[in-house]
Length: 121
Length: 190
Image (tube, rainbow over all chains, first blue to last red):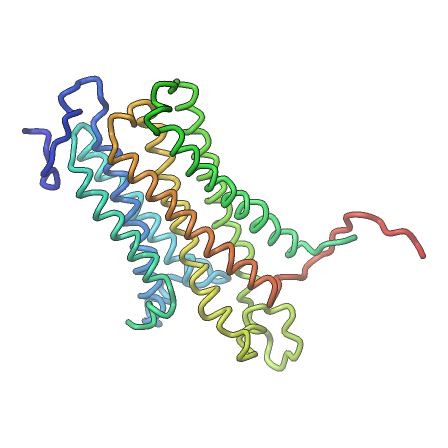
């Protein structure tokens, strides 16, 4: 089926109904939210481990590296959302796979922002 | 009765945006369950779909306001460096917490976790609001979208709960205070 993407391994019966909105936009929002959340955790660890990255991410001095960590993560999230939405908006993708990846990324973000865990790196 | 500007901002951030978000989040979970339960589907209406979208959008606005005021207004006061030789650290909450073995973990674990985990909340709830608005009635045809919606809203409740809990404990151990005083009620002369 031409509407499938590489991640689209499963087709829901609802896509045969032309009145149903394709799930691609929703999938793009979900996956990018997972990516954005993971980016917050990743940049937090990077800034904590490297003085160079910490200085680089101090966009707003009174807030320190937190300003850059979150700004870059938000920009990454929005960019991922825009790109994925552009690619998937007219398609149906395997939401089971997308949900799994997004929730794993979200779970990792919760875990990796927890200092006793992030200090292990 | 008076309050300092820093205390007022802390109240606006924590009690205004943060606590309201937590309350709204538990409401959202109930709302999502009721909206998509089998029985509710037959009673669904465009007005109810619109309400869900508006509700989640207001939650997203609260989440953004909470993290932005926290990061850019309160956090600089919290992490301000005390001048060398300062013995009274009351105006420097981070330094105050780190100065005592009994309180330093509130910063090293509490604040370090809070300042990052809180940012997962607006990301998750903005996504949820987008899906609720974009799909509205059509969500009944996308069970996997509904599962994701539930998952992210519940996770945002957890993340906001962690941020709220540590925010309250940090305020208890080393409150962000100071700045100009605002007189709320004029006291009677004794």
